Image (cartoon, rainbow, N blue to C red; front, side, top):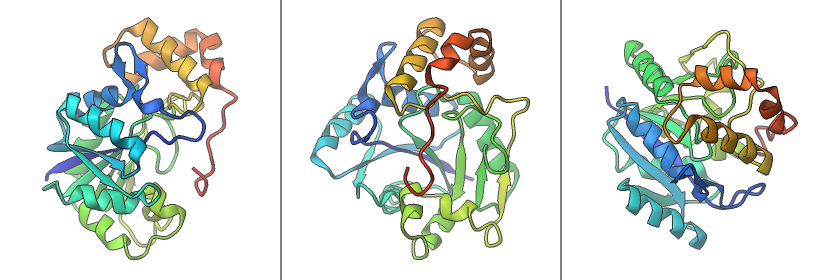
Length: 243
């Protein structure tokens, strides 16, 4: 069973424009996500899905530097963008990543991919389906490629920008599975959306170095350094229909 990875990336963030090309520990944020996906050694192919907006030409240039294929599609209709990227992949399933998660753990990608391959027939698998146990920014999700094609004619509004939300908000229609990682620290925030998120992530990378650090080590360090964890503790995630 072949799993392809698609990383959605654009420069037009409303709260922190240009965040995916910021330099972090000697690498761009996008480069760290690409590297984590590659380091998992669990994905058969990998592509970055960006937009057709002129500003995102910089992402195309970065992808060329990194040697990763890049597909361009609609800015807001991310599901259509994914379906376009999928045409370049010969895969049965798609692992979805966002380029604002520079602390992504290759071990979590590897474990999620192994679980997917062990449960044939799934439509969707996520590390935060039933209960969030990982810090935000470390989650991994995989969807069947054929299922994504099927929902393209049914998903509307915010479901098209979130790609997979139509699946997990209609559990009666799809075969879903969730993975948990107890004890977990779901209140921690390791995604990059604001300046305060950047300050925390910079502190983590400054401490651990430029490599990929296992999630459990990051969590343990943040629990030992509550002053760092507090840097973005006040930041709220946008509601599903607005994100």
